[in-house]
Length: 334
Image (tube, rainbow, N blue to C red; front, side):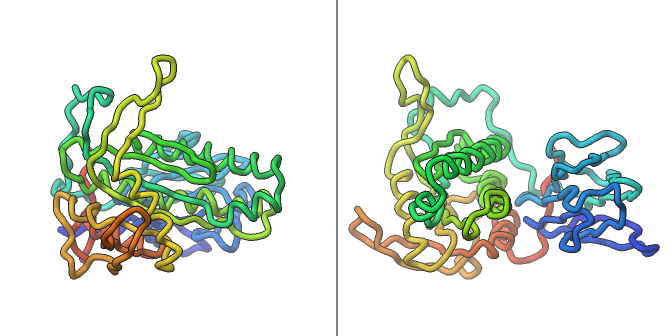
């Protein structure tokens, strides 16, 4: 049976209300009038907690630094926690009941062999994500060295934690850009592996969002991103004293070139054609994102790429997980 969106039920103002959470959607809870679920409770903070649905369909509950904490099934939430059906969230006197429809086993993914040792791999199928901050040179002049260093340190710290959660194999920080690598040990791109990359881009926006107010920036932070998939040499490229696990080759170089094409194409995200071609269940050409042919530096022939805005990510997640624009089937909990 096709799954429906997970949802929260709560009695607000004497009425039982249902709040659906769309794929890659964010449900904000607090006293702020901008919250999705507005609480009339002085125990609650203005921005108290947040539920975010990831690209695979699961929902994650996080406390937003509230004064009095968020309780889940009677225990205080101290780290982002995945929700299960009929979990009870309590904030002050308000009780919220989470509902997750019964998942299907159709999308259960095979696990990578437990004996795989990444350092021994010489040539592997990978996906590379490159994200680059827009207007960094101007911003660094406006803020000065001390403020821009503090800002970037926080962004990179939170990004590092995000990439760790989303099982990136390797990550690098180059100036104002981030490069992350995911391995595909089965020799093809599994839907949940690609969904983690989509989810990372969506969560990077949540990292950037509060920085303007927090650091009194002259404008909101913006970034462009690219995804490219292909084979590369991976392993410890460092010396005997320093381990530097990274990937080298055309797949990585092209990912950086594709990111620069965002400006030329007027989009937020550029995806290389191979990234969607190598999915274990490729998306039909007729329903893929809009395609463009673009010349990139260092290459003789035009590259076929897909261009997306951030608002297109939920649809892409559905296409990756289901192969269609139809109702998304949630993955089974392994």
